[in-house]
Length: 147
Image (cartoon, rainbow, N blue to C red; front, side, top):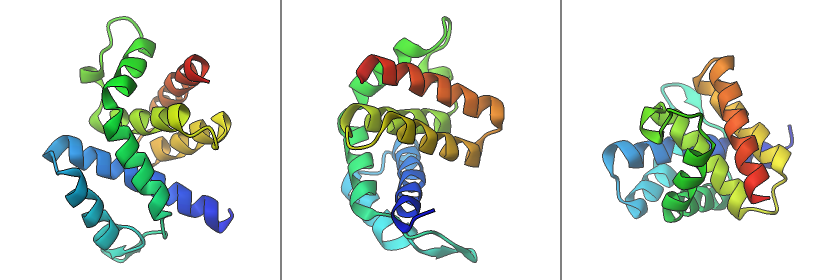
């Protein structure tokens, strides 16, 4: 994997974690970004070396997702099976879908296949194949609607 795509993959994973933290603790955005810049991106935590993340890309995904959250949530909700709502989704799953939807909406420089595949990788870090398949299906449906 090229250094840039590794840095972007690390940025996406960190963005999902930051969005999760924001959702759970209502950490104000400037504090959240600062905390991740200083302590998480490229840091070593409990002997785990975190890959250097592309900071500007991380910032864009976090800020953009938070800024457009209502629009993003409406898009995701419209692609869920009948009887499902955003509230029923696992909190981490929801952040993966939000970040992926943001990229599909706002980052035409990133191909549809790349965006979906990258968030599929993030999903695999947290979930088994069935949930990852769910992420794939929702993001694919979102992509068809916005691209």
